[in-house]
Each structure stands twice: as structure tokens, then as C-alpha cells.
Length: 86
Image (cartoon, rainbow, N blue to C red; front, side):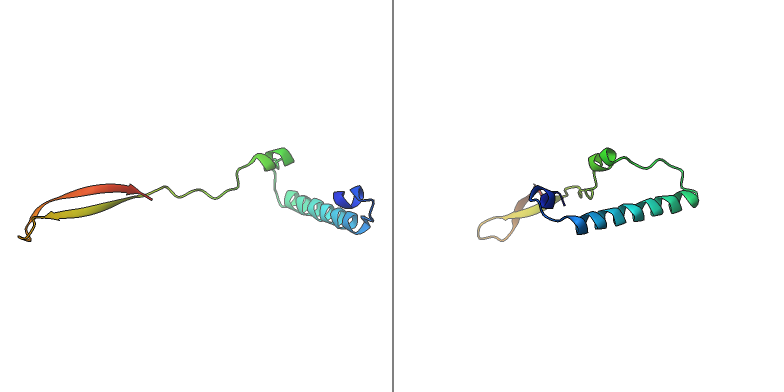
């Protein structure tokens, strides 16, 4: 709607949709209050500042095991662990 106004275009349809949306929202809030809703609703600034991103999964460590063998004998001479983050 703002772009239409800036370009000096007819914004009647957009304005009517916005007014209908505001009327519907006011009706929903009134119904909510009539049903016992009493907690304060967030302001626009509070709503915009709120973090709505999904929580990030913690990074897990993956352990790798390598086994060293003696050349020619096939016997193991030891092993080592290495940690890798993913």
C-alpha cells in the first residue's frame, strides 16, 4: 500500500483489506477477552523484538578410533582416539 501511495496509484483495495484485517483482529481480541483472557497482550515493539527463531541443536562430538598395526605382523601396537566436532 505504501508503494502504491508513493507512486500515486489507487490504494483503495489495499486500504480496504487492511481495514478488514484490523476489524477481524479487534473481533478476535474481544472474543478472547470475553472468554476470560486477561493477560496483557504484547505491543508491536515487544513482538518485533522477540526471538522467534527455533532453538539450535547443541553440537555433538564425534569420536574416531584408529588402530595402529605393526608392519608385517598384523598385531596391534596401540590405538588412538581423536575428537571431531560436527
